Image (cartoon, rainbow over all chains, first blue to last red; front, side, top):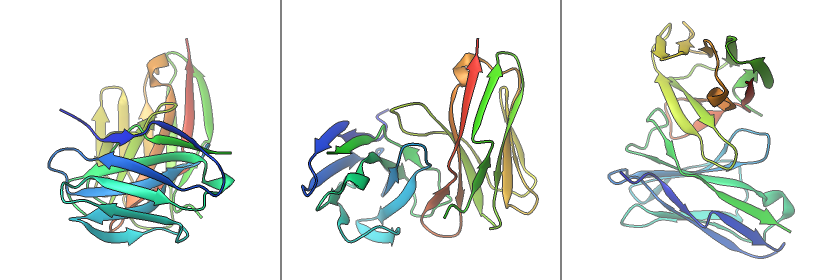
Length: 114
Length: 110
């Protein structure tokens, strides 16, 4: 069974650039959430999408945006990159849109902003 | 501001010893999940507890949810080097997101 897949696995960008990260959820899962994990910290919630609609947004600036496609895959976009955006970006897939539903994470995309 | 406080932050023990990791909050959660994460990888779900006072066992791992559903603990018996990793607790309320603790880094020395 395919788990949550994220691409790319690693990425290096320059300050001011834009980046797009991609996520494919587990087959049958309709919810995708994005988290940012800075080194030494737990993941911080960025967005949740369920059935292609944004269900929630964490405390992140408008430079962060996301969308979910009809096949339930998702993209996270970050504009005007800052050094502080360097982190592991995690995508989590869940069958339901509630936080209590078990979340299954991908391996993450390691973004380095230089 | 983290809703969930984990302690200790770091734990280094010898193979065969026992360890306990704590996860505390002033908030009530509808459920609490424990994950283990290895370097460069995403968190892997270990268990979900949903009922106050619930105890779940997974081989040498024992998870407990507090009666008031505000805290949880993870106990590992006879730790092995393969138990090394970052242990994360995450709480869910009746909404759409998980709130994570900062994690406990466990190192089991052979």
